[in-house]
Amino acid sequence: MQLVIVSGLSGSGKSVALDTLEDFGAHCVDNMPPTLLLEHAKLLMQPDSRYPRQAAIGMDARALPKDLAGFPSILEQLRELPCEVTVIFLDSDEDTLIRRFSDTRRRHPLADRAPTLREAVRQERDCLATIANLADLRLDTSRTNVHELRTLLHQRLGLDRAPLSVLLQSFAYRRGVPSDSDFVFDSRCLPNPHWVDELRALNGTDPAVRDYLSKQPQAAAMLEDLKKFLDRWIPSFVEASRHYLNISIGCTGGQHRSVYLVERLTEMLSDSDALQVTVLHRDMEVQS
Image 1: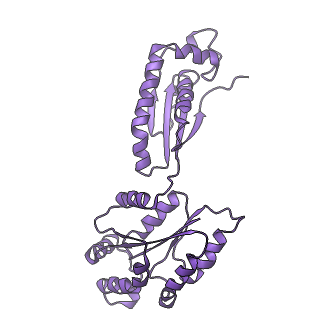
Image 2: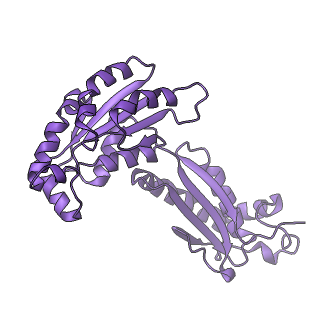
Image 3: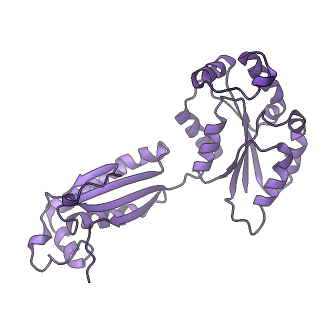
């Protein structure tokens, strides 16, 4: 099991770090008292545990000072367990932290202990010095935006990115374009099997319809262009930490052309480990 302990100054990006780890499939808990850390790790590591094999714990100045003081001993015991433990400490310069609190108008966790925001930041830095000194990875986020921090964590921790969930759906234009579409493609310009008597009652999953459309130069060209387009742009959605992508292909009745293209594209994309492809034929009539 991989256990990541995320700490740092308020406003430095701890929430973004935990959200990123959770998006990659980790079991995440924020603001855990250090005294509970060891027992929690043992719980996650039980043989019958159904928790993910990657976990992340958020720990910061909201914990009691006496509990934070005991962190070195707890960390030493954690490293004796059969798991990989990584401590991350996020930091930013003082002026950046103050500006971020001013922009968000959030209350600093140590506001009750300090007369000013600047003093609260300084007290927090002193309070977390023990964890900072034990960190395996220290990141200065003073000049880092949210997207850059996500990418940095992915690279430095070697996270396994969760597959992008891609929905490929066919539809009939006469029944409206799916409102959840990210991309919409129109196949009504292709030869229509509806006008072939022996194909009219069939749909795009039938071998006879597939054979007919596969022999049409326009259908082959559109399929090739769609595949090139998706190969070019899907990686950008993955890198942008998108989790869902809905691709809709329509034709007049939602029976033949759009169904055929969705089925063929599904075959082409399903080989990728970075994608989890789902198919929906919204308006296709099921053959009896």
